[in-house]
Image (cartoon, rainbow, N blue to C red; front, top):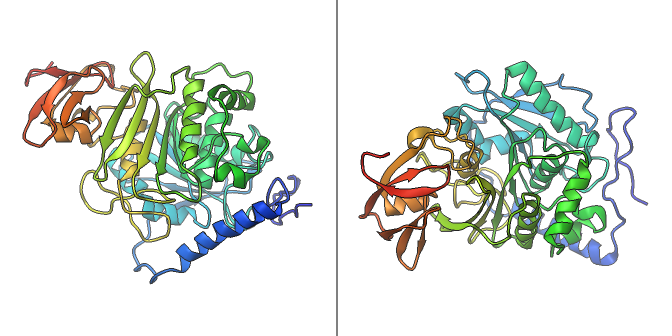
Length: 425
């Protein structure tokens, strides 16, 4: 019988380490995962000391049935009624570690959003993982899911945040918990970004280890039904969802990116064939986008080449760079947090403050972009195939894919690009 863990809120149900007693096969899988974890933690010299991001702990955010801790990063000069991004750390990590390395605080400064970081501890889970696999924590109105929901409510009342622009992202167990929040509170979160997470309610009839690796194959309809079961009376719309995976991940198999895609495209009533495919970032990350009828990017899958388990970062001061490698599970690659903020519609660094995700807070007016074909592709406004560049949405041929060919693109509606005169529109 699973052993309950100490440290729960009085009156809360006891919490098991895992929903099932591991079989010898599953125990061997667990030991393999632990070995990988310990090897990563113990290998090489300790990272150099660096200044930590200053977080504010918030203690009075509700009944907190999941016994979580709430932290806030509030940028100086935060605008009135700012959007919110909730961040959920991975196993063995903390809110501070995720703030220091993910690059999200820097983006909060640049883009003007309130960053809320939820933290779990060893009293909840020996490895400090969010308990995405436990029914006491992954259902609406209870456990850790309700605690995160209460943090959002506190952000709205205490900081004047905009309840219509609440987003969530997380890594690994935090990524799986991100999916939990999108499924159980689709009326709260407008969008989410899942980094190395898993489809919602995979552990209804499977071990969490099996869900992690090699993964579980269900039909898109079956996956979607599990989300609908989380809040049966909800009639939509469903949150927009971005899915990030390293193609060398051996902890949470990349197969889960496909299963997540199936789950969320089915919820949006979309085909599992991407509307358009882009190559983005310094590492040629493949980005598949699935557009709704109005041109909104409803689901996005970003497959990062050459990295394993973690949140991809690209340390540096460039506009497309962010993050640090000061802790395990932040591999050098692409600044995923910048692209996630862009997907959320929070990125103000692009000319015109366009929202590639489709929220179009400026009222739906056309945006104009003048850049080289290379930059257009890197920014997701165009795609490349066979050495040529094609405008996103319209598919117009823009010529050779390089830095020497320049074009102006008109974006209208959001996410649909056409060739335009330099004056645009």
